[in-house]
Image 1 (cartoon, rainbow, N blue to C red):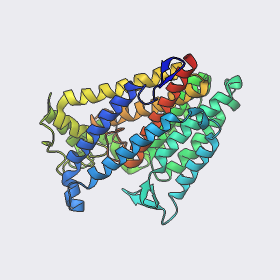
Image 2: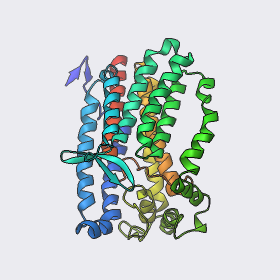
Image 3: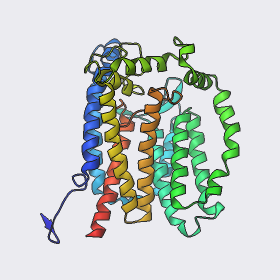
Image 4: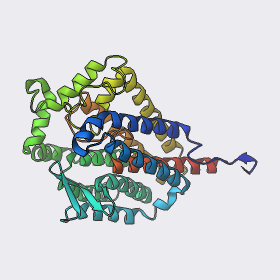
Length: 375
């Protein structure tokens, strides 16, 4: 088919720098989730395929959603920003309702819906990005005013942060804060306004980290995990052992040892450690290169977007992916304190996988609209 003398293309096929790395990462994720979870799956569910079957379904659903979203003009998100934000807040409140919220690992982070479970904080991140893109675009004429360009956005961030801290989930709040600050910086909010909350960080960190025993232990384990390798430093020391034993080319797919009930959460938060053990430094670097390709493409889409709303939206989505990859890799390699964040497209988990796929579908839609404007 042709249009104006040019071959008509589909949005997802026109963005190979997003499509191919995501397909490769998601496919490898299915393989590695099976490798990392087989032993746990047998002991917990009596079959080695429990987690990998679910991951395959999540992946298929996520790819379909990514393709579908790429066809939808991203600009329809602009007038829907408040509705999406209110829906995210409703889900975060619903998590605390007995019978709807699911407690796991001492936290209420999942919502029980008919036929499946859902993690509202993952949806809240995307909802916040969409709202900020809408609001920052709408207020461009007065973006340098404190009460217009900065304060209202911090209030919205604070309200969502409180709902997420109740779960509790400090890591997600930190990521949402970093995304918000970056989007406001790109939108032109004054640097002095962005820095004014800095004096509050120390007392807030004191009450959220130092006064909470398990968080303080994570900081202590990060500073010197080998002081207590059988307790507070258990996760990170076994993660480092996985990377160290993998060497340059790894032990081979399926040949890792740390996933055999040594390293906790090998198929979710620490899947990169298992990849390091089984595929070695070469495998880890290859994965980071694939992420880098997507991130660079996201930056380019943000720069070339046909509207400021598209620029801010692409900036937030790209920043979210960058932060997740950086923090997860930093934690598994002992460069950051332990925090339960998944590695996009690779870790086991339906909500995070589907929301990340949907986000990249939005990126493709932004790019498609920019190409239409150029033609």
